[in-house]
Length: 168
Image 1 (cartoon, rainbow, N blue to C red):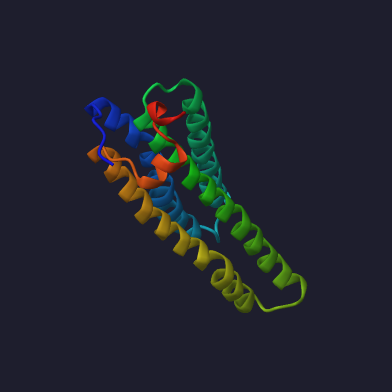
Image 2 (cartoon, one colour):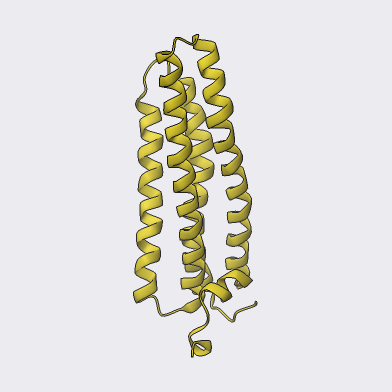
């Protein structure tokens, strides 16, 4: 649905989508790959990726929750709620697959698996599905940011967050 939104409203609607995209693309692809290359030297870069990610997702969730109460523009509220919904999906995927990776990595060592087998199992069952999920979220978020830039609201947003005049 096309909305008559000002340029400033469109820019503000894109804000949380841009923050989530930054987290997904820059933090979880570029910085994560850098951290993996440095893992033999130090685990601090890997911890930094996690800290940045949790901070950005927390920021998105807090701003979206605050927008429900304080944001007067329905267009911005809808886009921010969709960004928060995807941030929650990312957080659940991050936590579940992160726990699986830790379980596989430390569990493999505990039951006496060789180092190569443990890394292969950890990467194949934990890291690979996470990266595929991130790529899917990147595509969805780029589309959502484009819709915000174009002044469109997805049909799902209209169903979940109806326009105030339509609420009875």
